[in-house]
Image (cartoon, rainbow, N blue to C red; front, side, top):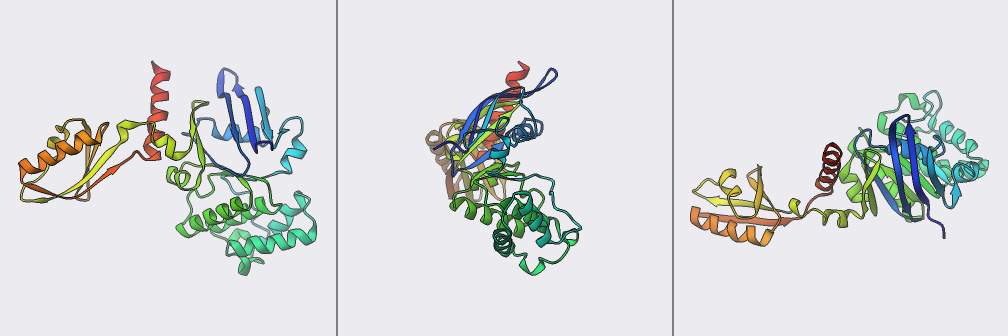
Length: 315
């Protein structure tokens, strides 16, 4: 069975600027795959090459084994695309937008009507199907845009910042529909700046910076790569007043952050830090009311990898 997406040495140069620099990876069918990176890292250029909108300078990109340059028509039939800027038509109703998208994808009339009804119902828009989209909120417009991308029941769905700037209700609804479509077999390629969204939804993530892939793995495995972001969260009770300065003096503790009455101690050796923490509390007459050891978050991994890549570039 071919991969849903397969890149080999994919490169895009604009003059002397390498926007995407010889990247290679695979996305197996059925995966929710996250694509993360700072602004200008090469995310959008990569997706534009994968969807046939931009011609690579070098390398190849395949969609279910189909070369996106040489077999573009066949490859595009497999995919649905939602760009960050919604491509809905404000002068048309929600129903008319979906019908138009269905025609573009050559979905038979009976099938597109059935599918449009299903999608509008899933997104809570069925009662508004005859209303012009121009009067919809941003979240409702995004739901219509995703419905348009799903009208042909694509095997591969590209989502570019699907929940950016949306209300909580729309966010939750969109994520639920994405998960539901994935359970039915749709592969999802998700570009997002929302690290927590990627952490919750993605089977694997790739992090791109300065046009290069700096990491690719499951969120859990990526979190294991940076020991320095391990930490201990602790709260105290007693007559003494703990201070960040004193807690930083504990062996193996590199940094301390206080927030909401709790202290977070960053360490590369939690057992040693815990021993020092108990000694500190005993000497200061403090009682430890709660303590948790925490691994690094995906956000901390992201910052560490993109920052180190930037430092390496300057050195």
